[in-house]
Each structure stands twice: as C-alpha cells, then as structure tokens.
Length: 129
Length: 129
DNA sequence: ATAAATATAGTAATTGTTACTATTATTAAA
DNA sequence: TTTAATAATAGTAACAATTACTATATTTAT
Image (cartoon, rainbow over all chains, first blue to last red; front, side):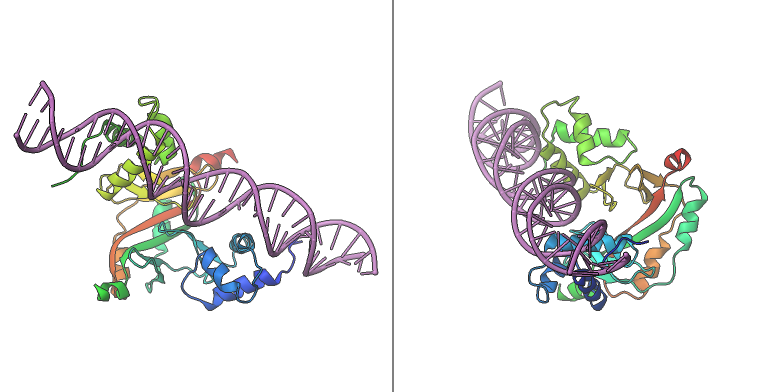
C-alpha cells in the first residue's frame, strides 16, 4: 500500500527532467516549470524531487560545486563537473563497478552505492580559452 | 611572492586537522579549537579552511551528506559515508587511478581531478542493528 | 457525494557559508 | 625598534539552498 497520491505537478517535474540532459538544479526546474504551472511553489519542486529520488525514479547528484543536481537517468554512469561553466556532463566510459568489489574487500560495512565525479574544464570552455 | 601572513589561528586549524582522522566539518573544528582560542570566529575557521585547500595543504570533501568535510591527508584515497551515523571513513583499497585514463579516452575536456565516494552502513552501525 | 488523506501554495524558519568592517597582528624596511 | 603597509581577525550581517509550517485544494476510495 503506497499512500501516495497523484499530482500533476509531480508528473510534470518528472516529465521535464526526462526531457533534459543538463542535470538541472531544483531552481532550474522551478523556473522552467512555471511556464506550465505559473503558481507552482519552489517547495513543491524540492519536495517532489526528494520524493522521486527516494522512490528511485530519479537520481540526486551532489557535485560539490553549487546546489544539488537531478538526473532522470538512473542507470549507472558517472559525471563530469566543469569548474568554469559549472555544467554537469555524462561521461562515456566502460563499466567501473569493480571498484565497488575492490572497496568491499577490506571493509566491514555495507556498501550500498557509490558515486564518481570528474572535475576540470569541459570541452567548450577549453576551446574558448 | 606569496602575500600571505602567518596566523596562529590558521596554524592551529591545520594542526588540529592533522591530528584527527574523522574528516571534521568546519563547525566541528570550530567547537574544538575554541578550547585553545575561545574568541576565534567561525568565519576565521571557514576562511582558513578554504585558503588551506586552495593552497593544496588540505582537501575539502563534499560528501553529499551534510556540510563539507576536511582532510589533512592529501594523498589520493577514497571515502565511505555512513548514511546512519554520517561518519566519513577512509577506504583501504588499491590504486584506481586508471578510471581517470578511462574517462579521458572519450572526453574532449580536461580532467584535473576526480572523487569517489562510497555510501552505505558502516561496520559500527551494522553491528548495532 | 462524502470523507479521509495527501499535496499544494505561500511563507517562515533553518542551515551552511560568505561578505563586511573596524580593529589587531604580522612583516619588511627605515 | 619605530613606522608603515598589508593581511588577518572577531563579530556581525547577509546570503543561498533547503526544509518546515499551515491553511486550502486535490485526489481517491467508499
């Protein structure tokens, strides 16, 4: 029994997140979604983003560079954060999940997940300089 | 020419950080350092932690679980974050720096650094439950 | 339709952090 | 060893990201 009720705001938040690949912040989503729902509250955006990520329908990304980002792609992949334009990009690379097994070898705790972030200057910013 | 002047507060912050291995937050350092410098300001702690990490003398850790942590061990290693007690632990594992080369292969930007965090339940919390 | 429960908008509060400012400490040079 | 220049400090205010509160509105099972 999931005491969860439908809301068009939540649906719209998830839909928008699925349509973009720039890993937006809560505020970016808020700004954009106001075109469809001019009265939506920023709190509603935050609440639903938290809810959706607890449900596993989206991923929350802590980049260490500004506010949290969100990603509708929940398949395992890694990110790059540009310290110049603060863009968050998907990294194209092979599976590295063996680092988890590596880590588990000498560890008495339970590893549930891991995150890998790369930092530097993105291709765009690199050209401009 | 480094327009940088000595300060006993900064020295004490670094010294304390070197003595502990719990990757404290700015506030944890502030609380503890007030025993030696009762008038030190939280802003001074934040300012010096930022300065020291810009100088590369310490590392700032963004765990995605509460406030930033700091680490006097600047050698390459990875961390575990317990979602129960919020402890941040050093992971004992072999060098995984080849994930950086992996990432560079299909990437036109410049990768300067990366961070790997593992999440779950630490050994202590695991026992208790 | 009704009732129970969840979600919302709007706002206030909280947390982590940075900015400001007048005073103090450090440092290099006279 | 004073002086003068500059950086650092304490204390406080401001800020940004996020969460909590509350009265109203929506959803949903009956």
